[in-house]
Length: 298
Image (tube, rainbow, N blue to C red; front, side, top):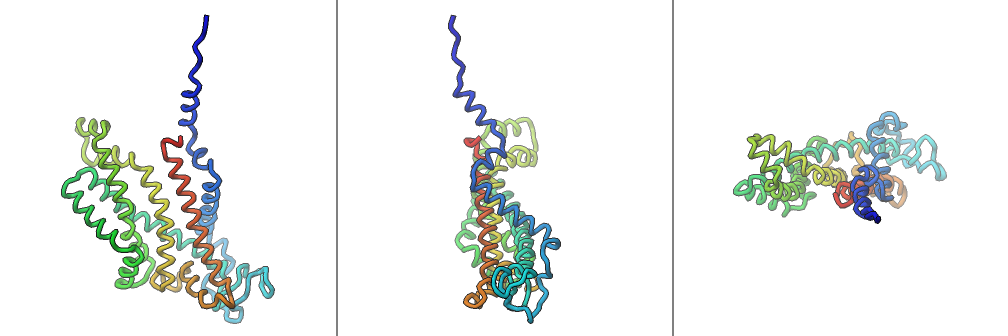
């Protein structure tokens, strides 16, 4: 009597599909590096008052241009040196992480909420509503986001709130196209049609059936949106159109240090590294998150 062989390949595929989300997310070294960089920036942002050894705006002209602690003339009290006004660079970078986090998360929240709402409406209803939203998005796509942000901030005036709102209204178009395309497909799916046939309200259909089905795409877009917001805020602050001077910003630090690159290179190097490493970390983590949320990776 012979026994049938067990279908090992299909069983293996089943185990792969059931692989835990975190195992898939952190299966690649770049994602781990990205998560570490994001974690460090988040740690600085959350615990800035406890980590920063000095007031970021405390001036000491007698201690200006002090080099990093490991160079001749440096001091352990100023780990990364001081700027032209004697302010501690390490403390300013730590507090700058909080500004980057606030701007990044708030800008994504505004732009993402607006873009997702309009994308679902355009994709689900179609017709003239879809045409109007698509044309508005196309018009905004024609303008570079940096130039549009400069124009808005230049008219209203620089402030933290203005920067956040500006980043939000310049970023919603990134969500509309993706969400619209998925909503356009989902409205024809059986589970959505079944909900409509059973008498579910429009609000319930959109919030309980359509929106959760595009949650993974929204999550990935929001992750990359944080990196975009940090870069845009840094660019605006570099041009003196971002947050006010009394609020520490990496972009403003970079602008202050550019004129001293030949004599005090640390003024521009360290804030530039902070921007680079944070954005790199967000992008690496976003790549891993995108792969982990892909059904073919699970």
